[in-house]
Picture (tube, one colour):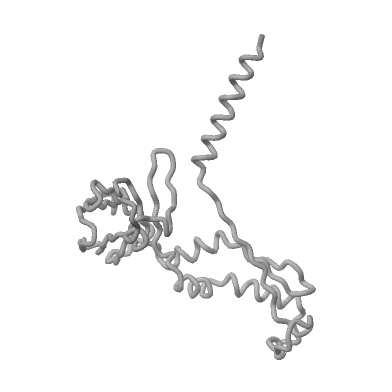
Length: 212
């Protein structure tokens, strides 16, 4: 008698699980193993550590791990990447980070440092017109702009333009949606990357470090 009820519960559970998977933000991870150039292991004839023979292999590894974790090294690496601005699409259930999949590019110059790391809400009312809003000191600021035109006030200057890969496509792109742009301060970006970075020695005998 209870079989139909069990079937219904099973179907509902499967549907709920499938919806949860669909709306869950995907997580990606990349891992690399770094082999240190150590003359004692026969990797090469480099004399990288010829002046530091007093260190053991383990001490060398620990030193290299700390160097790779250093804020200055991360800051130098991030300066060569375009991670300083984050793009997000705001949905009814979840907010998704877009990165290079964003249909537009925001060129932003901050005059007020308090706006760093704070969300700038961009709502396209047409493919050309949008509103930009943010909250500063408890007050909401709303600005109206058009694609490709400069928008400026005492806090920031911004120009929204179509991403080149989208602009060159033959398919029509509908921009009418809600987005969020975040301009990260250098220190905040370094701390964000550092919090997600895992660096540890894998094999002390052959000087291998894993970075993920």
